[in-house]
Amino acid sequence: MTEQAPIKVDMEKIVSLCRRRGFIFPSSEIYGGLSSCWDYGPLGVELKRNIKEAWWRTVVQERDDMVGLDASILMHPQIWEASGHLKGFADPLVECKSCHLRWRSDELENSNCPSCGGELTESRLFNLMFKTFIGPVEDEASVVYLRPETAQGIFVNFQNVVNTTRKRLPFGIAQIGKAFRNEITTGNFIFRSREFEQMEIEFFIKPVTDKEWFNYWLEERLNWYVKLGIKRENLRLRQHTKEELAHYARECYDIDYLFPMGWSELEGIANRGDFDLVQHASVSGKSLDYFDEESKEHFLPYIIEPSAGVDRSTLAFLCDAYDEELEDGETRVLLHFHPTLAPIKVAVLPLSRQEKPVTVAKQIYTDLRQQWMVSYDDAQSIGRRYRRQDEIGTPFCVTVDFQSLEDEQATIRERDTMNQIRVPIVDLKTTLQAKLEGESLFILPPGGSIWKVEREER
Ligand code: ATP
Image 1 (tube, rainbow, N blue to C red):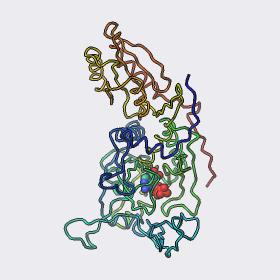
Image 2 (cartoon, rainbow, N blue to C red):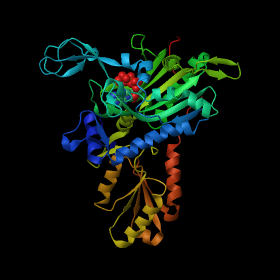
Image 3 (cartoon, rainbow, N blue to C red):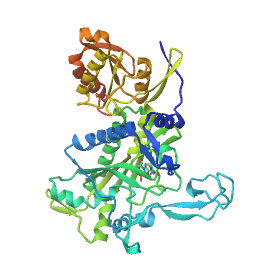
Protein backbone atom coordinates (compact mmCIF):
# COMPACT_ATOMS: atom_id res chain seq x y z
CA MET A 1 0.00 0.00 0.00
CA THR A 2 1.18 3.46 -0.85
CA GLU A 3 0.40 6.17 1.65
CA GLN A 4 0.72 9.83 0.95
CA ALA A 5 3.30 11.42 3.27
CA PRO A 6 2.56 15.02 4.24
CA ILE A 7 5.32 17.01 2.61
CA LYS A 8 6.28 20.57 2.24
CA VAL A 9 8.62 21.27 -0.65
CA ASP A 10 11.34 23.36 0.79
CA MET A 11 14.06 24.84 -1.34
CA GLU A 12 16.79 22.85 0.43
CA LYS A 13 15.27 19.57 -0.73
CA ILE A 14 15.11 20.78 -4.31
CA VAL A 15 18.66 22.15 -4.25
CA SER A 16 19.99 18.96 -2.71
CA LEU A 17 18.17 16.68 -5.19
CA CYS A 18 19.41 18.81 -8.09
CA ARG A 19 22.97 18.60 -6.82
CA ARG A 20 22.84 14.88 -5.94
CA ARG A 21 21.33 13.71 -9.20
CA GLY A 22 23.11 16.06 -11.56
CA PHE A 23 20.44 18.59 -12.49
CA ILE A 24 22.14 21.77 -11.32
CA PHE A 25 25.57 22.53 -9.82
CA PRO A 26 26.98 25.77 -8.40
CA SER A 27 29.11 27.44 -11.07
CA SER A 28 32.92 27.20 -10.79
CA GLU A 29 32.50 24.94 -7.77
CA ILE A 30 36.11 23.75 -7.49
CA TYR A 31 37.13 27.41 -7.18
CA GLY A 32 34.65 28.03 -4.41
CA GLY A 33 31.73 28.95 -6.68
CA LEU A 34 30.67 32.22 -8.30
CA SER A 35 27.84 34.02 -6.61
CA SER A 36 24.43 33.45 -8.25
CA CYS A 37 25.72 31.58 -11.26
CA TRP A 38 24.64 27.99 -11.88
CA ASP A 39 25.60 25.17 -14.21
CA TYR A 40 23.04 22.74 -15.58
CA GLY A 41 24.30 19.15 -15.32
CA PRO A 42 23.44 16.15 -17.53
CA LEU A 43 19.79 15.95 -16.39
CA GLY A 44 19.28 19.69 -15.94
CA VAL A 45 20.32 20.42 -19.49
CA GLU A 46 17.75 17.93 -20.79
CA LEU A 47 14.99 19.35 -18.60
CA LYS A 48 15.77 22.90 -19.64
CA ARG A 49 15.99 21.91 -23.30
CA ASN A 50 12.61 20.18 -23.08
CA ILE A 51 11.04 23.28 -21.52
CA LYS A 52 12.44 25.47 -24.28
CA GLU A 53 11.35 23.02 -26.97
CA ALA A 54 7.83 22.78 -25.52
CA TRP A 55 7.60 26.58 -25.53
CA TRP A 56 8.95 26.87 -29.08
CA ARG A 57 6.60 24.19 -30.28
CA THR A 58 3.56 25.90 -28.76
CA VAL A 59 4.36 29.48 -29.69
CA VAL A 60 6.18 29.05 -33.03
CA GLN A 61 5.84 25.62 -34.63
CA GLU A 62 2.11 25.18 -34.10
CA ARG A 63 1.12 28.72 -35.08
CA ASP A 64 0.70 30.54 -38.38
CA ASP A 65 1.20 33.95 -36.86
CA MET A 66 4.63 33.57 -35.27
CA VAL A 67 8.23 33.36 -36.42
CA GLY A 68 11.47 32.87 -34.52
CA LEU A 69 14.61 34.95 -34.13
CA ASP A 70 18.05 34.61 -32.56
CA ALA A 71 19.59 38.06 -32.17
CA SER A 72 23.10 38.67 -30.89
CA ILE A 73 23.72 39.39 -27.22
CA LEU A 74 25.96 42.38 -27.91
CA MET A 75 24.06 45.14 -29.67
CA HIS A 76 24.57 48.77 -30.62
CA PRO A 77 24.77 50.79 -27.36
CA GLN A 78 22.19 53.30 -28.65
CA ILE A 79 19.60 50.54 -28.37
CA TRP A 80 19.84 50.84 -24.58
CA GLU A 81 19.49 54.59 -24.81
CA ALA A 82 16.32 54.22 -26.90
CA SER A 83 14.87 51.51 -24.68
CA GLY A 84 15.37 53.56 -21.52
CA HIS A 85 17.72 51.02 -19.93
CA LEU A 86 20.71 53.36 -19.72
CA LYS A 87 18.71 55.85 -17.71
CA GLY A 88 16.09 53.79 -15.98
CA PHE A 89 17.24 50.18 -15.53
CA ALA A 90 18.52 50.77 -12.04
CA ASP A 91 17.71 49.64 -8.53
CA PRO A 92 18.24 51.74 -5.38
CA LEU A 93 21.35 50.43 -3.60
CA VAL A 94 22.44 50.89 0.01
CA GLU A 95 25.54 49.51 1.70
CA CYS A 96 26.07 48.60 5.35
CA LYS A 97 28.77 50.77 6.88
CA SER A 98 29.86 47.92 9.21
CA CYS A 99 29.71 44.64 7.26
CA HIS A 100 29.64 46.20 3.75
CA LEU A 101 26.84 43.96 2.52
CA ARG A 102 24.73 45.63 -0.17
CA TRP A 103 20.96 45.69 -0.29
CA ARG A 104 18.11 46.95 -2.44
CA SER A 105 16.62 49.71 -0.31
CA ASP A 106 13.15 49.19 -1.82
CA GLU A 107 13.18 45.61 -0.46
CA LEU A 108 14.25 46.46 3.10
CA GLU A 109 11.69 46.44 5.88
CA ASN A 110 13.66 48.65 8.29
CA SER A 111 16.39 51.23 8.02
CA ASN A 112 19.28 49.11 9.38
CA CYS A 113 21.34 46.30 7.84
CA PRO A 114 19.27 43.07 7.93
CA SER A 115 22.46 41.06 8.47
CA CYS A 116 24.29 42.86 11.31
CA GLY A 117 22.00 45.74 12.26
CA GLY A 118 24.63 48.28 11.15
CA GLU A 119 23.98 51.72 9.75
CA LEU A 120 23.27 51.97 6.03
CA THR A 121 24.61 54.47 3.48
CA GLU A 122 22.34 56.83 1.55
CA SER A 123 20.57 55.08 -1.30
CA ARG A 124 21.99 55.54 -4.82
CA LEU A 125 20.79 54.21 -8.14
CA PHE A 126 22.75 51.27 -9.48
CA ASN A 127 22.43 50.33 -13.17
CA LEU A 128 21.93 46.60 -13.58
CA MET A 129 23.51 46.26 -17.03
CA PHE A 130 26.87 44.53 -17.35
CA LYS A 131 29.37 46.61 -19.33
CA THR A 132 32.16 45.37 -21.53
CA PHE A 133 34.28 46.74 -24.39
CA ILE A 134 34.21 45.95 -28.05
CA GLY A 135 37.58 45.92 -29.84
CA PRO A 136 41.06 46.37 -28.35
CA VAL A 137 40.67 49.83 -26.81
CA GLU A 138 38.93 50.08 -23.47
CA ASP A 139 37.50 53.60 -23.67
CA GLU A 140 34.03 55.13 -23.40
CA ALA A 141 33.50 54.92 -27.18
CA SER A 142 33.92 51.15 -27.15
CA VAL A 143 31.50 50.38 -24.31
CA VAL A 144 28.83 47.78 -25.09
CA TYR A 145 26.41 46.01 -22.78
CA LEU A 146 25.42 42.41 -22.25
CA ARG A 147 21.71 42.54 -23.02
CA PRO A 148 19.51 42.60 -19.90
CA GLU A 149 16.54 41.23 -21.90
CA THR A 150 16.15 39.58 -25.29
CA ALA A 151 13.22 41.81 -26.30
CA GLN A 152 15.22 44.68 -27.84
CA GLY A 153 16.77 42.32 -30.41
CA ILE A 154 13.22 41.67 -31.62
CA PHE A 155 12.13 45.32 -31.83
CA VAL A 156 15.14 46.33 -33.89
CA ASN A 157 14.53 43.44 -36.31
CA PHE A 158 10.84 44.20 -36.77
CA GLN A 159 11.33 45.72 -40.24
CA ASN A 160 13.68 42.91 -41.33
CA VAL A 161 11.04 40.35 -40.47
CA VAL A 162 8.21 42.27 -42.17
CA ASN A 163 10.35 42.69 -45.30
CA THR A 164 11.56 39.11 -45.53
CA THR A 165 8.46 37.13 -44.54
CA ARG A 166 4.89 37.49 -45.66
CA LYS A 167 3.74 38.14 -42.12
CA ARG A 168 1.06 40.76 -41.72
CA LEU A 169 -0.46 42.06 -38.48
CA PRO A 170 -1.26 40.51 -36.13
CA PHE A 171 1.91 38.45 -35.86
CA GLY A 172 4.63 37.73 -33.36
CA ILE A 173 8.36 37.16 -33.12
CA ALA A 174 9.65 34.70 -30.53
CA GLN A 175 13.13 34.38 -29.15
CA ILE A 176 14.95 32.31 -26.54
CA GLY A 177 18.29 33.50 -25.29
CA LYS A 178 20.59 34.53 -22.48
CA ALA A 179 20.15 37.78 -20.60
CA PHE A 180 22.39 39.32 -17.94
CA ARG A 181 21.58 41.53 -14.98
CA ASN A 182 23.98 42.61 -12.29
CA GLU A 183 21.31 42.06 -9.62
CA ILE A 184 22.07 43.60 -6.22
CA THR A 185 20.42 40.85 -4.23
CA THR A 186 20.27 37.38 -5.66
CA GLY A 187 19.34 34.05 -4.15
CA ASN A 188 16.62 31.46 -3.99
CA PHE A 189 18.67 29.10 -6.13
CA ILE A 190 18.07 29.64 -9.87
CA PHE A 191 15.14 32.01 -9.24
CA ARG A 192 17.27 35.12 -9.41
CA SER A 193 20.69 34.88 -10.97
CA ARG A 194 22.95 37.25 -12.84
CA GLU A 195 22.99 35.21 -16.03
CA PHE A 196 19.73 33.58 -17.09
CA GLU A 197 17.64 32.67 -20.10
CA GLN A 198 14.43 34.24 -21.29
CA MET A 199 11.69 33.05 -23.63
CA GLU A 200 10.11 36.18 -25.04
CA ILE A 201 7.34 36.93 -27.49
CA GLU A 202 6.73 40.34 -29.00
CA PHE A 203 3.31 40.22 -30.60
CA PHE A 204 2.66 43.09 -33.05
CA ILE A 205 -0.94 44.21 -33.44
CA LYS A 206 -3.20 47.00 -34.64
CA PRO A 207 -3.51 49.52 -31.78
CA VAL A 208 -7.28 49.19 -31.39
CA THR A 209 -7.00 45.45 -30.77
CA ASP A 210 -4.67 45.62 -27.77
CA LYS A 211 -7.20 44.75 -25.06
CA GLU A 212 -8.36 41.66 -26.87
CA TRP A 213 -4.82 40.39 -27.57
CA PHE A 214 -3.64 41.18 -24.07
CA ASN A 215 -6.40 38.98 -22.63
CA TYR A 216 -5.70 36.31 -25.20
CA TRP A 217 -2.03 36.05 -24.21
CA LEU A 218 -2.75 36.05 -20.47
CA GLU A 219 -4.96 33.05 -20.92
CA GLU A 220 -2.73 31.34 -23.46
CA ARG A 221 0.35 31.56 -21.26
CA LEU A 222 -1.44 30.42 -18.12
CA ASN A 223 -2.76 27.41 -19.99
CA TRP A 224 0.73 26.49 -21.18
CA TYR A 225 2.01 25.91 -17.64
CA VAL A 226 -1.06 23.89 -16.70
CA LYS A 227 -0.87 21.74 -19.82
CA LEU A 228 2.67 20.86 -18.83
CA GLY A 229 1.61 19.74 -15.39
CA ILE A 230 1.79 22.73 -13.04
CA LYS A 231 -1.04 22.58 -10.52
CA ARG A 232 -3.43 25.40 -11.16
CA GLU A 233 -3.73 26.27 -7.49
CA ASN A 234 0.00 27.06 -7.53
CA LEU A 235 -0.41 29.73 -10.20
CA ARG A 236 -2.02 33.14 -9.98
CA LEU A 237 -2.30 36.34 -11.95
CA ARG A 238 -1.24 39.57 -10.34
CA GLN A 239 -1.93 42.93 -11.90
CA HIS A 240 0.74 45.62 -11.57
CA THR A 241 -0.41 48.70 -9.70
CA LYS A 242 -0.01 52.09 -11.38
CA GLU A 243 3.00 52.83 -9.15
CA GLU A 244 4.94 49.71 -10.12
CA LEU A 245 4.12 49.79 -13.83
CA ALA A 246 7.33 49.95 -15.92
CA HIS A 247 7.89 53.12 -17.94
CA TYR A 248 7.10 51.32 -21.23
CA ALA A 249 3.95 49.49 -20.09
CA ARG A 250 0.30 50.47 -20.40
CA GLU A 251 -0.76 47.41 -18.47
CA CYS A 252 1.08 44.46 -16.98
CA TYR A 253 0.27 41.20 -15.20
CA ASP A 254 2.66 38.77 -13.59
CA ILE A 255 2.02 35.07 -13.70
CA ASP A 256 3.14 34.14 -10.20
CA TYR A 257 4.04 30.67 -9.01
CA LEU A 258 3.87 29.55 -5.39
CA PHE A 259 7.62 28.91 -5.00
CA PRO A 260 8.96 27.57 -1.69
CA MET A 261 9.75 31.17 -0.64
CA GLY A 262 6.21 32.34 -1.52
CA TRP A 263 4.34 33.76 -4.51
CA SER A 264 6.87 35.15 -6.99
CA GLU A 265 6.99 36.15 -10.65
CA LEU A 266 7.37 33.39 -13.21
CA GLU A 267 6.43 35.40 -16.29
CA GLY A 268 5.41 38.97 -17.04
CA ILE A 269 2.82 39.93 -19.67
CA ALA A 270 2.85 43.56 -20.71
CA ASN A 271 0.98 45.78 -23.13
CA ARG A 272 3.92 47.91 -24.32
CA GLY A 273 1.81 50.01 -26.69
CA ASP A 274 3.98 51.61 -29.38
CA PHE A 275 6.66 52.72 -26.89
CA ASP A 276 9.50 50.62 -28.31
CA LEU A 277 8.97 51.30 -32.00
CA VAL A 278 8.51 55.03 -31.35
CA GLN A 279 11.76 55.11 -29.41
CA HIS A 280 13.80 53.10 -31.91
CA ALA A 281 12.43 55.09 -34.85
CA SER A 282 13.33 58.31 -33.10
CA VAL A 283 16.86 57.36 -31.91
CA SER A 284 17.87 55.48 -35.09
CA GLY A 285 16.24 58.00 -37.44
CA LYS A 286 14.73 55.12 -39.48
CA SER A 287 11.02 54.79 -40.14
CA LEU A 288 9.58 51.68 -38.53
CA ASP A 289 6.06 52.33 -39.85
CA TYR A 290 3.92 49.45 -40.90
CA PHE A 291 1.79 49.81 -44.04
CA ASP A 292 -1.62 48.25 -43.71
CA GLU A 293 -2.79 47.19 -47.15
CA GLU A 294 -6.45 47.01 -46.16
CA SER A 295 -6.82 50.51 -44.78
CA LYS A 296 -3.88 51.93 -46.82
CA GLU A 297 -2.58 53.49 -43.61
CA HIS A 298 0.92 53.80 -42.18
CA PHE A 299 1.20 53.37 -38.40
CA LEU A 300 3.35 51.96 -35.61
CA PRO A 301 1.94 48.68 -34.28
CA TYR A 302 1.27 48.09 -30.59
CA ILE A 303 3.08 45.25 -28.89
CA ILE A 304 1.92 42.63 -26.38
CA GLU A 305 4.85 40.97 -24.65
CA PRO A 306 4.71 37.66 -22.77
CA SER A 307 8.17 37.37 -21.21
CA ALA A 308 9.06 34.14 -19.40
CA GLY A 309 12.18 32.95 -17.61
CA VAL A 310 13.62 29.58 -18.57
CA ASP A 311 15.36 29.14 -15.22
CA ARG A 312 12.32 30.20 -13.19
CA SER A 313 10.18 27.81 -15.25
CA THR A 314 12.70 25.04 -14.59
CA LEU A 315 12.49 25.74 -10.85
CA ALA A 316 8.68 25.84 -10.94
CA PHE A 317 8.45 22.55 -12.85
CA LEU A 318 10.90 20.94 -10.38
CA CYS A 319 9.04 22.20 -7.30
CA ASP A 320 5.64 21.25 -8.67
CA ALA A 321 6.78 17.76 -9.66
CA TYR A 322 8.47 17.01 -6.33
CA ASP A 323 6.72 14.43 -4.19
CA GLU A 324 7.45 12.04 -1.35
CA GLU A 325 5.49 8.84 -0.68
CA LEU A 326 5.77 6.39 2.18
CA GLU A 327 6.33 3.00 0.64
CA ASP A 328 6.69 -0.01 2.97
CA GLY A 329 8.11 2.24 5.67
CA GLU A 330 10.56 3.92 3.31
CA THR A 331 10.28 7.29 1.65
CA ARG A 332 9.97 7.20 -2.11
CA VAL A 333 11.05 10.54 -3.58
CA LEU A 334 9.71 11.18 -7.04
CA LEU A 335 9.39 13.87 -9.64
CA HIS A 336 6.03 13.67 -11.41
CA PHE A 337 7.34 15.37 -14.52
CA HIS A 338 5.02 15.63 -17.48
CA PRO A 339 6.42 13.13 -20.05
CA THR A 340 7.20 15.99 -22.46
CA LEU A 341 9.55 17.52 -19.90
CA ALA A 342 11.08 14.44 -18.28
CA PRO A 343 14.85 14.44 -18.98
CA ILE A 344 14.85 10.67 -19.54
CA LYS A 345 11.70 9.13 -21.03
CA VAL A 346 12.51 5.45 -20.54
CA ALA A 347 15.09 3.48 -18.51
CA VAL A 348 16.01 -0.03 -19.66
CA LEU A 349 16.90 -2.28 -16.74
CA PRO A 350 17.87 -5.95 -17.13
CA LEU A 351 17.06 -7.93 -13.97
CA SER A 352 20.30 -9.87 -14.24
CA ARG A 353 23.79 -9.00 -15.44
CA GLN A 354 24.12 -12.31 -17.24
CA GLU A 355 24.94 -12.18 -20.89
CA LYS A 356 21.60 -13.19 -22.40
CA PRO A 357 19.26 -10.74 -20.65
CA VAL A 358 21.89 -8.01 -20.99
CA THR A 359 22.08 -8.61 -24.76
CA VAL A 360 18.30 -8.35 -25.13
CA ALA A 361 18.17 -5.26 -22.89
CA LYS A 362 20.92 -3.56 -24.88
CA GLN A 363 19.10 -4.25 -28.15
CA ILE A 364 15.97 -2.64 -26.71
CA TYR A 365 18.05 0.29 -25.46
CA THR A 366 19.67 0.81 -28.88
CA ASP A 367 16.30 0.71 -30.57
CA LEU A 368 14.49 3.08 -28.19
CA ARG A 369 17.24 5.70 -27.99
CA GLN A 370 16.74 6.51 -31.65
CA GLN A 371 13.48 8.06 -30.61
CA TRP A 372 13.95 9.37 -27.05
CA MET A 373 16.51 10.08 -24.36
CA VAL A 374 16.77 6.61 -22.81
CA SER A 375 19.08 5.40 -20.07
CA TYR A 376 20.47 1.92 -19.48
CA ASP A 377 21.35 0.68 -16.02
CA ASP A 378 22.31 -2.79 -14.83
CA ALA A 379 24.03 -1.93 -11.53
CA GLN A 380 22.49 -2.52 -8.07
CA SER A 381 19.19 -4.09 -7.06
CA ILE A 382 16.12 -3.47 -9.19
CA GLY A 383 14.43 -1.69 -6.26
CA ARG A 384 17.26 0.83 -6.01
CA ARG A 385 17.31 1.33 -9.76
CA TYR A 386 13.56 2.06 -9.76
CA ARG A 387 14.04 4.57 -6.92
CA ARG A 388 16.79 6.30 -8.84
CA GLN A 389 14.58 6.67 -11.92
CA ASP A 390 11.63 7.85 -9.78
CA GLU A 391 13.82 10.50 -8.25
CA ILE A 392 14.83 11.92 -11.62
CA GLY A 393 11.28 11.72 -12.98
CA THR A 394 11.62 8.98 -15.62
CA PRO A 395 8.01 8.09 -16.57
CA PHE A 396 8.69 4.47 -17.65
CA CYS A 397 11.11 1.66 -16.86
CA VAL A 398 11.43 -1.41 -19.07
CA THR A 399 12.73 -4.54 -17.38
CA VAL A 400 14.05 -7.64 -19.07
CA ASP A 401 14.14 -10.95 -17.13
CA PHE A 402 14.86 -14.61 -17.88
CA GLN A 403 11.24 -15.12 -18.87
CA SER A 404 11.80 -12.50 -21.61
CA LEU A 405 14.29 -14.84 -23.26
CA GLU A 406 11.52 -17.38 -23.72
CA ASP A 407 8.36 -15.40 -24.33
CA GLU A 408 10.01 -12.35 -25.97
CA GLN A 409 8.14 -9.99 -23.69
CA ALA A 410 9.35 -7.23 -21.38
CA THR A 411 7.77 -5.39 -18.47
CA ILE A 412 6.84 -1.71 -18.49
CA ARG A 413 6.64 -0.15 -15.05
CA GLU A 414 4.97 3.22 -14.59
CA ARG A 415 6.57 5.83 -12.33
CA ASP A 416 3.44 7.35 -10.78
CA THR A 417 1.32 4.25 -10.13
CA MET A 418 4.14 1.67 -10.06
CA ASN A 419 1.78 -0.51 -12.14
CA GLN A 420 3.47 -3.05 -14.36
CA ILE A 421 2.33 -4.49 -17.68
CA ARG A 422 3.86 -7.21 -19.82
CA VAL A 423 4.32 -6.32 -23.51
CA PRO A 424 5.81 -8.18 -26.53
CA ILE A 425 9.27 -6.73 -27.20
CA VAL A 426 8.32 -5.99 -30.83
CA ASP A 427 5.49 -3.76 -29.58
CA LEU A 428 7.53 -1.88 -26.96
CA LYS A 429 8.18 1.18 -29.05
CA THR A 430 4.59 1.72 -30.16
CA THR A 431 3.25 0.99 -26.66
CA LEU A 432 5.66 3.46 -25.07
CA GLN A 433 4.93 6.00 -27.76
CA ALA A 434 1.20 5.73 -27.13
CA LYS A 435 1.73 6.02 -23.38
CA LEU A 436 4.08 8.99 -23.64
CA GLU A 437 1.75 10.76 -26.04
CA GLY A 438 -1.43 9.70 -24.28
CA GLU A 439 -0.21 11.21 -21.06
CA SER A 440 0.82 14.31 -22.93
CA LEU A 441 -2.75 14.84 -24.09
CA PHE A 442 -4.33 17.54 -22.08
CA ILE A 443 -8.02 18.08 -22.58
CA LEU A 444 -9.32 21.54 -21.93
CA PRO A 445 -12.67 21.85 -20.16
CA PRO A 446 -15.74 22.88 -22.25
CA GLY A 447 -15.29 26.36 -23.59
CA GLY A 448 -11.58 25.73 -24.04
CA SER A 449 -10.51 27.82 -21.09
CA ILE A 450 -8.93 26.92 -17.77
CA TRP A 451 -9.14 30.35 -16.32
CA LYS A 452 -11.67 33.01 -16.76
CA VAL A 453 -9.41 35.91 -16.24
CA GLU A 454 -10.97 38.29 -13.78
CA ARG A 455 -9.74 41.71 -14.33
CA GLU A 456 -10.87 45.23 -13.88
CA GLU A 457 -11.88 47.22 -16.90
CA ARG A 458 -9.28 49.78 -17.81
P1 ATP B 1 11.85 40.60 -10.85
O1 ATP B 1 10.80 41.64 -10.48
O2 ATP B 1 11.65 39.28 -10.19
O3 ATP B 1 13.25 41.13 -10.78
P2 ATP B 1 11.42 41.45 -13.50
O4 ATP B 1 10.02 41.99 -13.40
O5 ATP B 1 12.56 42.40 -13.46
O6 ATP B 1 11.63 40.31 -12.40
P3 ATP B 1 11.21 40.98 -16.27
O7 ATP B 1 12.08 42.13 -16.63
O8 ATP B 1 9.74 41.10 -16.45
O9 ATP B 1 11.53 40.53 -14.78
O10 ATP B 1 11.77 39.70 -17.02
C1 ATP B 1 10.93 38.70 -17.56
C2 ATP B 1 11.22 37.35 -16.95
O11 ATP B 1 12.62 37.05 -16.98
C3 ATP B 1 10.83 37.23 -15.49
O12 ATP B 1 9.46 36.93 -15.36
C4 ATP B 1 11.70 36.09 -15.02
O13 ATP B 1 11.10 34.84 -15.34
C5 ATP B 1 12.96 36.26 -15.85
N1 ATP B 1 13.99 36.92 -15.04
C6 ATP B 1 14.16 38.25 -14.86
N2 ATP B 1 15.22 38.50 -14.08
C7 ATP B 1 15.74 37.31 -13.74
C8 ATP B 1 16.86 36.89 -12.94
N3 ATP B 1 17.66 37.77 -12.36
N4 ATP B 1 17.11 35.56 -12.83
C9 ATP B 1 16.31 34.66 -13.44
N5 ATP B 1 15.25 34.98 -14.20
C10 ATP B 1 14.96 36.28 -14.36
